Image 1 (tube, rainbow, N blue to C red):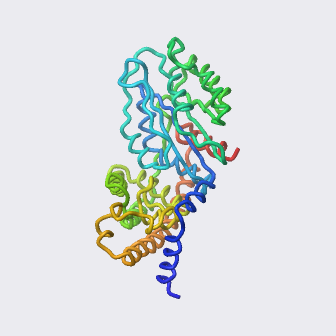
Image 2 (image 1 turned 180 degrees about the vertical axis):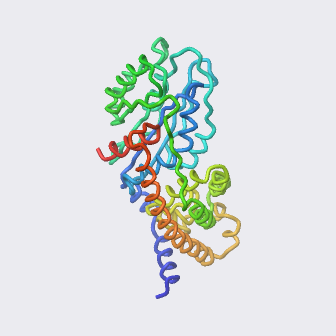
Image 3 (image 1 turned 120 degrees about the horizontal axis):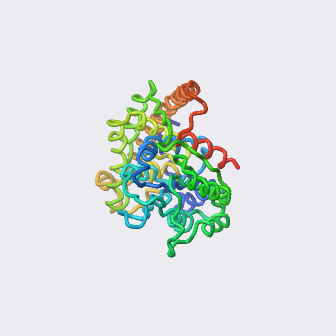
Amino acid sequence: MTSSTTLRSLAIALAALPLSAGLSAASAKPTVEVAFVLDTTGSMGGLIEGAKRKIWSIATAIVDSNPDADIRMGLVAYRDVGDDYVTRKVELTTDIQDLYANLLELKAHGGGDWPESVNEALDVAVNKLQWTQGGDTRRIVFLVGDAPPHMDYAQDTKYPVTLSVAKQKDIIVNAVLAGNAADTERVWRDIARNGNGRFIPIPQDGGQIVVIETPFDQDIIILQREINGTVIPYGPRALQKRTEDQTQQLSKVAAAAPSQASEMASYINKRARSTSEAVTGGGDLVADIGAGRNSLSAIKDDDLPDNLRAMKPEQRLDEVNRQMSQRKALNDKLGALVAQRDTYVAEQRAKASPKASSFDRVVEDTLKAQIKR
């Protein structure tokens, strides 16, 4: 039997599976959920820029610790009453590319008086994000800021109450202190203690966030671009447009920051072993059929891209098979490069000061410990 015949037989078998079978298998996976509660007032500019540069390495630290898990990340940005916003929420999502795009939009601005709306931000994170209920799930929050909460806002749910709810929901709350304000440190230590988390002090600007460029970055980016060429967007037109935009994000990031684009591709490649994804967030027919999450027979013609709609059913299957085969071959090549990149980065990190405290390093170390608890 030829490899193409084998692939076609596999795809036909997958197409015969009910969608619920794929969903049932996915729901059995362990889940890791991480939310960042981030002060975005003016004094936090350096740390926010560092977080933008390192969000992909943080996400990769999660998948390295638990490669089979479903990974969802979210964000609650906060300022204070009277600023442009008090809180802004990015829901917990597997679409890390979308989270990254939202993070890029954050600017440090506002503030004025010293305390900030920490109480409201924690309440949003614990009670208004859609945490997965039950199952094999790790739920982790990182509060990141430099100023204490307003305890004089009558409308706020105060943080001790919120932390009691967090314990009931099995949500760990870590407190990352930017700077060395004594009044903030007292509260942050209390939050970490009552949140079953860690108190983590770092420099005001986020510390020495080291961006490591490697000899493999450009080749990784080239391969990921080729993999993105195997994406077949499907679903409602708005979803198809979003998926097309996701395939272009890598090139835009690479133009400004090759190391970030390489980290993005590394994360997606490692996730592809269990998800078949080339982009995050769904909407790719090749990934969903390859992973058994959907079948061609279950998809309405109106939800197919124009080129597939013009084909006969067997031609559609052949096209999906072709892209599946090409993606697998490219991902195998990319995986070898990613492994070489990981080794290079580990060597370069070992040469740096092992005691250097930075936002990304302390978050990665904390995640590795708490995911394994």
